[in-house]
Length: 338
Image 1 (tube, rainbow, N blue to C red):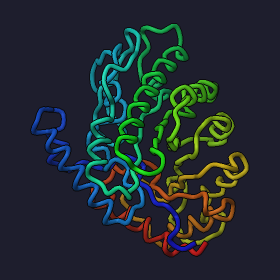
Image 2: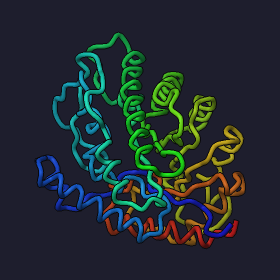
Image 3: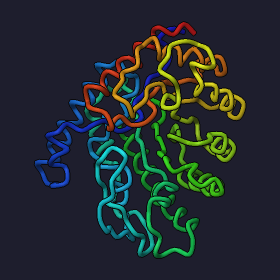
Image 4: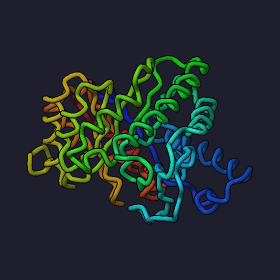
């Protein structure tokens, strides 16, 4: 079992300063910088030993909400709001019917496919319809549900196009699509709505591996119950943020990973992307500490169903810190004995 665990980056990675300071200017120069930053970040990911390179740290995107909203009709931007990592993005009001007017991620996926080896794994993160609904002001629809369904239709169209790009590339295996839903359990009374958005977004699309990424939930059991009968193949979740930095395999040392038992009981046929490094601290967890987190989780879940990832995207850390966290995560899999 040693070394068999798949390691994956969740999505975002800190942009180089030469790109972050010019990104909003747009134009040919910025497009060239995006491609340069993607190449460099793919190189860093390879250096860490990651199995799955994602889309090279999402260098093509400024932020998860605004990027998608820019490619939709019906959204009016008012001004900037601050995200948790002190970056700013434009929040929008829905003032007319939402529909997809241009691709969200086609250029990004095409570029990554052209600049990775056919055997290298990639994964496309897409902001989910529920989070788009929750983070938008609704000035048009009679209720949140109707708005969420139109967001879902737009995302469905996007995935269909991405799948066609994947098919034309001749790559083996399914296209991996990760639906990012940080707002997923914000309103427990709306879990049925979350389920319906997921089902609508992926309905009828074959040849894809679908996962959902949720971070900082107060109760993942809500998620497991609501989405158990959907077409999701896996769940990429946060745990390290709620764990201790003490080594060991005792319940007191590994409080967050006791919750893996809930996943194992509720979803016996899905994989778990196990968050093993905290993206909100600069402290770089040792490979031995990360190994202990994996060992404890494996008490409840067959290691064959575990993948390793950071809790969330690493854009909140410096590129150097993010690199070290990913390196230690991949080293830890070799220490894990199964």
